[in-house]
Length: 297
Ligand SMILES: [Zn+2]
Image (cartoon, rainbow, N blue to C red; front, side, top):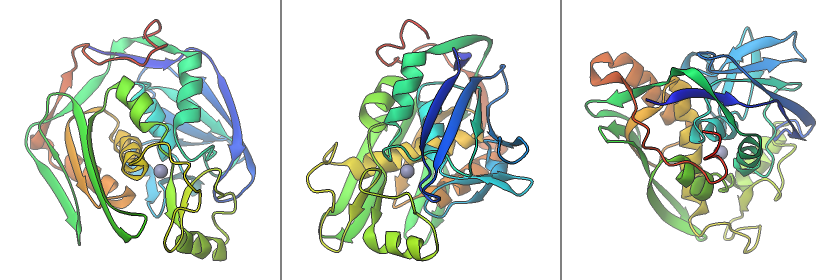
């Protein structure tokens, strides 16, 4: 059985919003058991937006949640950091419309969360255990979840770009693997998309400091890749964040081919609608923990 976790004390993080380009102050606060992750827009009358499938309003380029018409964007890297470190209950206060982009990865969040430590809560966390395969596809993209003892994600990307074609990786989602192998992988984008977003008044805060940008033939950041297969690692990181919106850790193997935010959310909706294909279980304590967190977990 794994107990629910929150953070042991408040964390303040300030950083640029990817789309607005403005500084955003984010305050993470411990929350009681069974709260889940709740975003609170302090600049909009403290409107609360629950991190859940029902709150998703946009999946173009990033995952955006909303409640009562108030939005919070680019939530997936922060949600991935919580999910990857088994942190279940947090209030996330923001004084702007998006989570700070930081360096485009989940590493700055993971470092602060590990430094701060988690606090165990006196209630078990249920897992959603997949009993039979569930598949969603759209054009050339597919995503599926199949039974598996643990949580695993296998992702395949394919782009007809001179800098990279196919990248494929399968990884067990333990806290250790998440913190070391996935959290540092940065967002990537194509220069043509960045230019298109800018023409719509978006991506104002986007720069080579918070994304790997691909030009027509090359990576514009030079040789500063954190992993040889950083792109596919980032897609898995995004998937960890998006999939956490189902509200329970998934016991299963997620297999994605040319997928993205939109299909991640479609898969969650299909899982929720296929009630006979999964069951709730309490998970035995077998998951590894990130170094430095062992004392607190
Ligand atoms: Zn991302």
